[in-house]
Length: 582
Image (tube, rainbow, N blue to C red; front, side):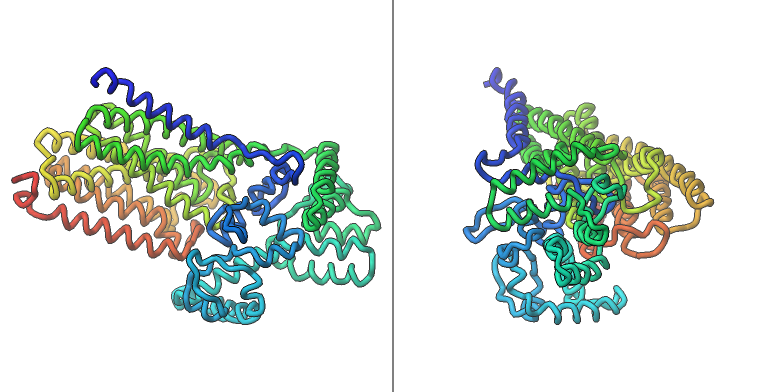
């Protein structure tokens, strides 16, 4: 048994790698069917960058449905690119696809919808209520954010989803412009005037007619009518959409070949890695890593219950393999975007989790007691869950602020200060584990108590250094961008709070005011301070760093704060009443 136990970690890692490899294998189009995945690699500009149609489809379906797939009438999962083609082509199928997530009961009643299991509804089920929805959305938009109730928020959210849906349908109206009739041209122009109020996908690349700029498909078609000559890209894309709507795979594939030949003859300047991004979308590495972190956590817990060495080593090497996949995935995002790893809130969640796992693995290597395994697996899993919910706003590679378009500062200030967030959160996580283990179990002996104290102290020192350096670098960036080092902006104040709080804990420890339990209690509150700096200041909606506001974050932020205050209350129970002191 002992001989076999030596190979268990290797077997666990090989199984994890085999599973990851199987998920990375891209699906293939049927030889005699529509080459929809090939279509998904074609370029389009949306939300500030060139991306494949596959990304456009996934991001917008997530906005509308909270999922990257949808279920057809037979309850079978279908890829987002099929939904996008149905919408863009004006297929009658699009109106019957249950993709709109509407979970608010009051809103369902207002729209005449019956409550169903997955809360997914089709456009045709509430199309007649769109004018009333628009009226309600306008009313809610006139209210201050603090005055809106849950219903108002849900109305605005659904109205935004319908706008996204109708914007994607603008390509369907290209046929009106291409038929050459005055009536058709006027209809296309009216439709263009309506949809250009919103952010349209720019599907027509530069080079076809010498314009030198990306344009929405309908705009390019109208421009072509005025100029008397249509851009070949418009003609070929329209032919693909018509063939898809008519169910003609041969015509679709022929038009696809023609369009790819057109793109090859008019190559993009600095072309993005479209095929690689499509493969990355299919692989969904962060989702896979989250699942493996959960498995590592279970193994770490079993390591405290029995067969400690086998489970501890298996959890460690599984974490190491998952961390490698996590690292490669971050590298892939850098390759796709051309920017350092953090450009928006989604990037911070992915990176902070990565930093926590890295520090946790080092702790486990130094103190092989399973503590580093458990805390890093928890941090990795939770951060990627947070990232999953942050992806609901659309493109996770979108640049949220013009001032962020500075690669040097993104690679220094943003990376360093988020590493400081990682360390502070990890210290708080270790402290929570220490307090709960001490109060609720008998497993916190004197040696383990000392190990916890050393780990929390060491991570806090690291957190103070990184948060201080990151804050100073942020001041230098502010001076470079706005002409002042410090302006008492809420985000700046949040960063300063982290530095001061970590310094307070360490000074209290050095001065003998607190010992391990005091350090732990204060470190748990340090997680609250860091969460406020990370998310809370964005909810204020003020300051130069006001970005990434999400209504749902406020609720979950309050839940997190309440959980940390509960742990602090548990930690303040007199030491003599702890189970580990019995």
